[in-house]
Amino acid sequence: MDPLQDHDPLDLDAVRARELLAQADQTEATARAGASWTAIALLMVIGAGSSTALVGTWLAGADLLGLPMSLFFVWMAIGFVIHYRFGNSVKRGFSRRWLVSIGLWAATWMLGVFVTAPGAIGDNIWVVGALALALTAVTAVGAWREASA
Amino acid sequence: MTTPHPRHQLVEAFTHPVRFSLVAALNATDNTEFATLRDQLQVSDSVLSRQASHLEALGIVGIKKGYVGKRPRTWLSLTANGRRQWASHLDALRAIAG
Image (cartoon, rainbow over all chains, first blue to last red; front, side, top):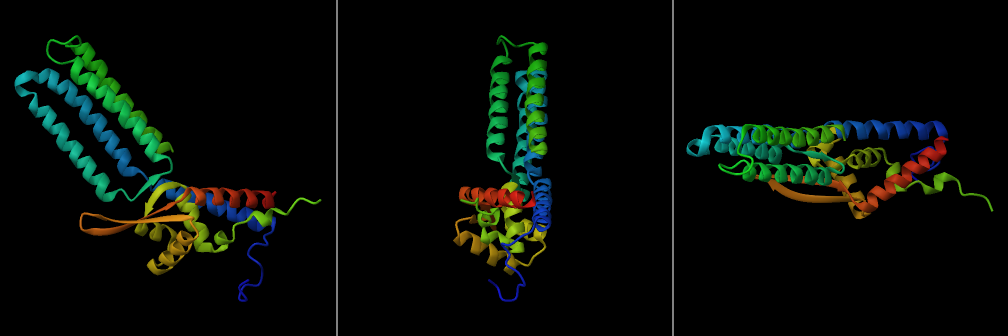
């Protein structure tokens, strides 16, 4: 026992225990509040970029397909760089939630690219619109879950 | 036979105020960068470094060093053992609080 302390730190009364529990709750809440914001922003960039790129490539046609896709990849790169550079903390359980969100987005994106290709089964505005909405929903829910975690 | 008092389940490593706050903050995250944690806990680099190293030696905190671009960064996280011990410590506090 530290001779400078007037009591054994392991000998707590109920009042002190409640104070410590409140302090732990407050510290955890503060840590959560500042965490994962770059990942949340990145998910929103991916959702916005991929959904508009899907509609954009369909509207642009084969000749101009590269323009919306290039813009999408530029925005993806910006999002990843900001996440890499400024992401100082991620909330507990982030890895699992991130894999689920990115996995669902990747599956929806691949479906969108192949199904809406010229001459494919989904080569019409309704399918393109539905898949763009699905991309938006998947990433928005992922961002919401991360913000709420 | 009497039931042992819950204070016997308290983890001595967490009775230090900086270590207590450090572990509480890390418990909310998968990992946190050193400077972010230092600012949140409002302690100096040396204090945080000393207490984090103490907890690392006990197998409670993991410390990973790396670079972001050319800048060195240090990341801290709670180990699985650290999360178990912290949960046990909080359980003991709740039992004492009644």
